[in-house]
Length: 287
Image (cartoon, rainbow, N blue to C red; front, side, top):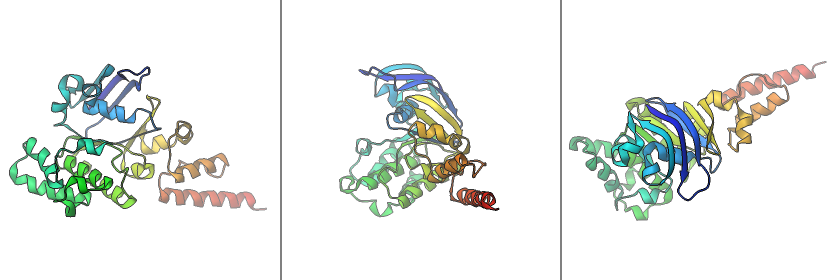
């Protein structure tokens, strides 16, 4: 379990808290999405979970963060990295090898994965990320999207207890983005891996995540199941968070008294809502 209690953090040299009194718990095996406007504190929250804050980025740190019973301040990043695998926005800073295959081998060998498992893990991770054909390519010859896939493959091959990803599909096309999410779902269900992901592609996130955390100016504005959080469409829009278009449509239909049910999360629910709204509109129009 991940437990965050009263977390407040201010980067060194800053005059404001980037996170303020954050308290939350994430159960083992959960699939959690983190959303919020630019500068809301999403990346910093992931840094607090994997220990990058305060060990790499210093500042004023109050409260506590524990992961699998380890206090992130006391444990340090080396010990935490064996539990929490991370994919950062700055992919180039994360790369340690010269060739795609070696990027995966570096972590597997350093973490002492049994030799007879390594080839299977490398092949599975590369295939799942859609880059099996890039196995022997130099990293400096890859596009930004290919590097993202390599970083994701390198971390998922380790099969950590927790994986934290900060906008991992930022440079990927819709098909590749979905493939990554499907792979994360597979790891979540097959190995019980806890997935925590910051993502701007809200429709995709809402399809795969089970819970959402909404940050607003460093404060935890909302948390709960995807369905429960999206019922607060007005508050989300006011805080600068994009919501699925079908949910926005439901909000507008509610405002016009053409729909009274829960706000839809996907196209199937949107179609059902539209049929209900049309039937209500026809009823109003009938003489």
